[in-house]
Image (tube, rainbow, N blue to C red):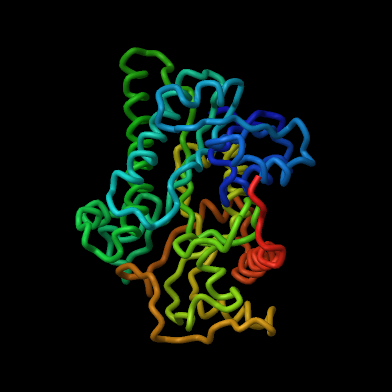
Length: 362
């Protein structure tokens, strides 16, 4: 598939979010033009200020409802690539359709529109590392690769009485949306072969990120929710802290938000990324390690102590699971950013926002 070079226009959906705003920044820094989609002009105010130094290379397109037919038609005109990030990110849903509909239908709606916009060469999709846990493999014996798939969450989302139903619905929505994207591309390619026509001119690449920490380029009008990645970090640096103890189990999967962004950027020019799933994982560690980093950096904050009995979100095999991250490592030039980097850069921005009374509504 042709390379998408700097100077090209790249669409970033949900650009006012954590991962998407960081991705827009890195694209702009590398010389790309970026058009970011948001649900309302008002929600774009902060990111427009954050990226104002890039002038006309950054613009906003309002897409109020990503599942509405033709919602992206105007937004993607003239673009060479799409980075699709917009999707529900919270873990408080009570019923699958609350997140499955926007995640799946929004993705297919975007791909249908991209198929008609002949300049689109690459579509980069934000999945979840949750799509490669709870696989059919025995994690004590085998390494999880990008060829593996979560085989349990589709069943777990059916039990609405499960106390972790919100988590399962979030993971399930990302899993279902990714499967729908691959199915769309495969079916379109099959049709192309049958009719000897190039119906789909773009390649698909899927990143499967872990818990994303690092610098914050989105607005936060108050303390982050406790069911999102930045909220899990803030739990330990808040004054007073929102947790009594930090779990010591080394079962949490982390990645620097700039590593996610840089993999999107690298995928635009790398043929090796075309048609691939990329496990996007910097390290596996514990929130006790996160708390230790914070405690050393902020001795005046009451960072909670390590507690082996503190609850931690886990999945079967979390203690021993290993992943093949070789493609991501290669595309990043051989190195992932450290846990210390992602924790301290994120904490710095959280404390700065907290100290000024958070970001003011536009």
